[in-house]
Image (cartoon, rainbow, N blue to C red):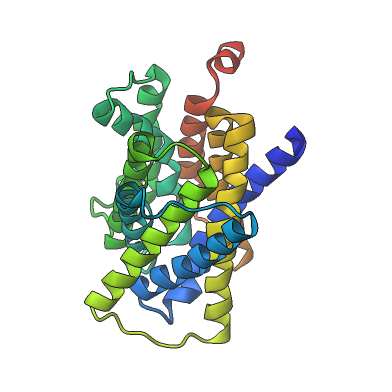
Length: 290
């Protein structure tokens, strides 16, 4: 695979993740958040297992059950539960902008938990990015109340940051594809168990909600992970992470095309957040040149 094609695939992964915020809305009109999360990752895990079988590559679920269990519980179970609950009560644009700060939040947690030396640019950019999000969430000072949906999305963002940090310590050596599959399987089982234990209402979705859920599972869970992992392998973590800034941009464009354009406040906060994250994640030599 050439470098240009890798760039296209990584950009596409960000677009698919950005679309998830918009796609979640019709799904949640017909399915309970726990059921939606469990169904999404049961489909995704099954497809990933089929991919691994076609490649004749084993998935060491038993050998790495503890690592996959913890990562699946935090990064798949916890994140998706809070994601779907949050998206019931907040806008797609707000959710995407909250998640845009994840690279910086991950860097902060890595410094606290793993003892990694914090990057000064990351630490300087984090309050600026959070200020951009605050402009969107708090209405530029017009309100001091954080909506429940936004708070849940902040929790989802924290879960994903913990997943990123814990992955550096717990992720087994070996195939990234096998590790992704194992984590998805454990996360799908955790979401399913939670749905069963809480007696979450199960209903048969309509055609639109069902196809949208399948699109989230195949596009935003399978293809996006595969494309992003290809970027990590060929472009490196720093360059690949820059493409995550396309996530909120994609969400805003889709929202505008479907009749709910972002407000001026959302656009302003989005520009501040995306700009701060971009500057923080650029390689040092490119920042110096700028």
